[in-house]
Image (cartoon, rainbow, N blue to C red; front, side, top):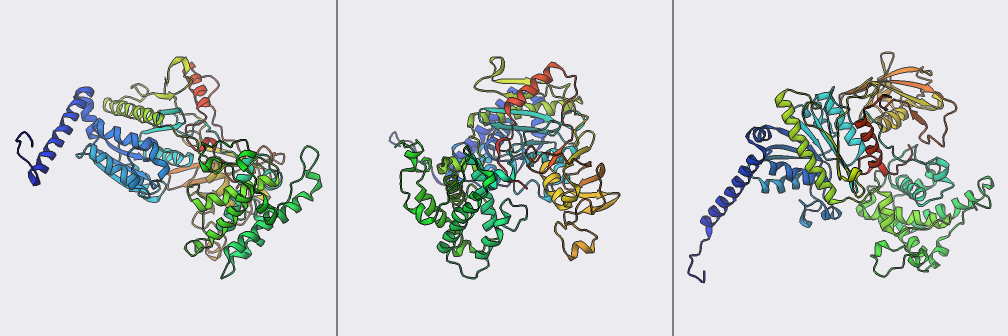
Length: 604
């Protein structure tokens, strides 16, 4: 204005800005058309996509999709935005904390390309509304998930709907992108994935040796104290005493915390120490700890752990025993505050809930003190309890970019009427900092479906248990069919009759009226070693046969969950060299799912 230029404001300024914006978007799309070529660009514009996940990979993926020219996208995500997401999920800002990831991500990418239709769904992809019929509306499904259970579910939905699936994941500096299509490529479950680590009951309950054992114990303790009743909880023998506090109408939270402290870290430890057969010179008995004694232990916890670096954050310092004792009582008292009292009996541990994380951290540290195990900072405890593998933003960006490249190859293959293998689709591994053959990106050919896969191949899984007479049908459905085989709401049939219905998971009059008895053992249902069950999951469009066998020699040490899955998920003996490279790369990746590869889970 100093040079005499006229001032422009009001509607005219808005119109000019909009025109400039539109011009910029138009120029960008013209550039994309030139890069892709007219034919590919029209395939991109016409494609209807479903994106599952709007987190680390999902944010990068959605941004890439709209800037590549995709105009019809729907995205599903269950999560809300947490402050910890902001350092790598770049579509989100502090003002978005506690809002739906799917909704905010959709809003953000529409700013990049207003002409794009981006529809957000805040919900769990395993909900009934996102079933086979919903998936069938799309040309391609693109995954950006970080947990094994959801990835299995989407895999089965896409197989049932016969839709191509772009599957991707990252773990630190490692990542993978592949393409799945029924009848053409191996599915997500053709190869066995790294199983979640479980520990024998006796280790968690009586003889912990590592911090992770104590953290697993503490998570079970939180569920026992504040979650729904669960007979399979590792600490169920303590339930009667701990539940007495919950039944009282008025509870002094601090007094309850001290009472639970005395029960767990003093009285129960004395009982454990009295079990002489468990202890030796190499493994001395645990030392009981009273609240009064713990409160006097004010020494420098960080110094004792050799981590007294003044530059550390407070959460990275190991607290004193006294601080852990006070923190435990304070966390229990907080659970009985008016705002949370009504949640007792239905709470679920979350690493992102400060109160539940404080409870688990302090309880685990106090148990470590009982058993002379080096205690942890809150930072380390949260990483282990929440099964956190540090996410790397650059890996997510590379993986998301590779997904878009493979997506374009899928659309080209479909347009030309050729198979994915005949097209340019590949599995691509991201391998850094020690890449194979000096290449960060390692492509390999797509593998054919495994004939032994119980999901897309032979449709037969085999499970061995130690005793049919000890397994209830409901426990088999929950621990084995849902937990190990990945079904969501499975119904089980034997000799043409339904013996377990997910609508009636517990014994009661309604279940009995339907002729169902979830509390019956496999023997009571007439099963014997070698019996054949049918598994049906309508929500996933999944079904398979399940052979149940009895193995009295089944090792509880090797199979602490109480069963062994024998479903073959290995490749045929003769494989092409490319497949060998793929297997090796997969082993080094240690399972692309970010959480599943290292997750510590409670034994069912």
